[in-house]
Length: 304
Image: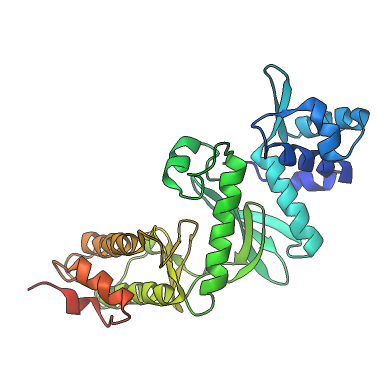
């Protein structure tokens, strides 16, 4: 887990952010930013750069490596600090609270605004960049791609999807976006994976999930990563979250990905609720019905 940087923010001065922004700018061109270029990138004097490097290194916001030259790179904490400063300047958030969830590809915190919200930092590529680079199509055509770029593109894609889908689809309400971070409404309820449904609820909840997939497809998106871990259930209904892998419905693989999503969701219900979930569901026919907006209930697709 990347350290929560909120407690450090009050210690940072405007010139520290100039230095962080300069390193960020330099990472667009090389993995390690040459120290000699930092005065230009950060719009600081050489002496000021020296001082700010020491301050940012002390707080683990940047890291140094001596190769053919002395180079610097943002740590994720430094990237977090830049995003938090922007949100603060926009008055999108007033403070950062406790973690709400920590995963391989994101950290989520409660934040204060006009009411409690959620702040999601994307972490794609930070710990396993090669795998992400191979699997995510928004990195496949770049010769020099850093984790910084990968995380930012993931956040951009997710925020764009949320803006398109909300409120017609039950997704978290998007509030603001900067770099690799998104401010959004907090989720109600618990993950489907941790919920225990009553027998009479099972098919109804499965149908609810599938209907949200219909609505998303009508709005132009396939989630492309549906599972029991990105559906929340509460007394109000369900919410589908985590959309960084979403693809538009005109994507070459959209129907294939939709069918995979359907298979994942139905498969989960079959494993956890085998007595209540219809057997031998025709996944291909069900996916086709979702795409055609002809879905009513999963029971209609049980093979006899």
